[in-house]
Image (cartoon, rainbow, N blue to C red; front, side, top):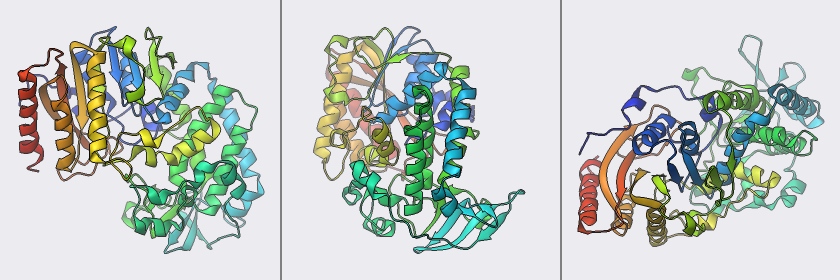
Amino acid sequence: MNKQINPFKESKSKKVRPTMYRAMKYWGKKPNDIWKNLIAEYSQEGSFILDPFAGSNVSLFEGIRMGRHVLSVDINPLTSFITDVYSSAKYIDINDLKQDALDIIEIVERSSLYKKNWVDKKSGEINNFIWIDGKILEGRVKDNHGNVIKVKPYYGNEQYNLGFIKEHDIFRKNISDFISISNSSLKKLGGKQLYNIWTERNFNLLVKIFTTIRDSDINDNNKRALIFGFLQSTHLTTKMNALRSDKSRRPFSSSWGRPAYLGLSKFMEQNPLIQFRRAIFGNAGLISALISVEQYIGNFTICHNIGKMNTNVVLNEDFLSMDSEKLNNAFDLALVDPPYGSIIQYGELSLVWNSWLITCYPYYKIDLNKEIIINKSHSRLDYESSMITAFAKISKLLKNKGNMVLTFNSSNMDDWGSLVRCLYKSNFFFIDIFHNKNKRSSEATVGTKTDTGTSDFYLIFSNEKECSKDNIYSIEKLNKIIGDVIGSK
């Protein structure tokens, strides 16, 4: 492989991300230093960049920082929501936001719901309960020295807040149809609806925190920021949080991050209010993230109107159906991180956050039927058809001989085969492929047989609109590399 240009060489020494990236939870976040290097290598200041599967929007943030114009598109509303919160940092008074958060926390702390379920009269606030095979082994309280005080199990006599569930039907979504959950996990969760991923106690307290924020009279920017903080705590309070081993010496911390809905025989039921406090005031919390945005990027503006490409545009849309004819030949670079076959069901898994987000802000929307993915509703042929359409659209939007950087990984060679077949029908000329092993477990985590569990392959292409045999030969070269380098692992 040609190694004359390697845009990843700087990234190998980077270990610390700006807090703005650590605060937001999103499946498969891309390393910001790699995206920065790609933008620097394949575009100039003032260039127009396209990201049709924007995810956590690292491309947008790095592009803005480097003086580019970016159009980012994603069917997942988290993309737009994260960006809206960060772009509003310039309007937020941090001291006011802190006080608003403290007021919300005080209201919840004083509620009978909280005192009944999460406060031990003798020892104080309970951090977590340990569940084993459907029963609570113990509760844990942290003393002033960080040591564990064990308290008696408490189940309570609560039921799920059926009024809230009925009002917001998304929580009744039948997850038994999801590809990202097994029958054994479904049985351990104790029910087939989305709300069953939380215990009764935690779901009801999350509703209390959520509605207290939603129904408060604080200003819109602060409210949206606090909802952002709230979302960061919803996954950590599910039944899907595995106990850490005793050797880790972390009795108040659980492990979460598997790319599936996973019911567990042993799990830690985390206190939602403690998790919310951390999501606001912690080292990687909302307050630090907003400060980080101003330090790392500065004030920036985005819009949600594709007709205003003189600024940066973020669209909560399906890229395939997006009306973009007026932007043909407008972009210098496309950064493309498409779904990797069937590996991670992003739409399904993101409901752990989006179910709450959409309940508060219905205009942040997602249609799982339009997701480009292989699952029970979408065959491999459907996936390939959609990918071919996506590549054709990207080619039209790119200038002639503009570049596309495609990131991909899979342990399934059929997924690589699908990718190559789709590229055969495109105008893209293969230039090079790089493999970069990420430093951080929260970035681009994909289980593979290729010793690339926290990594991705980056494929570099040139958009050659006068499609010729050379293009096809270049894709055949890529196909051989995939067989030699990836298939042999």
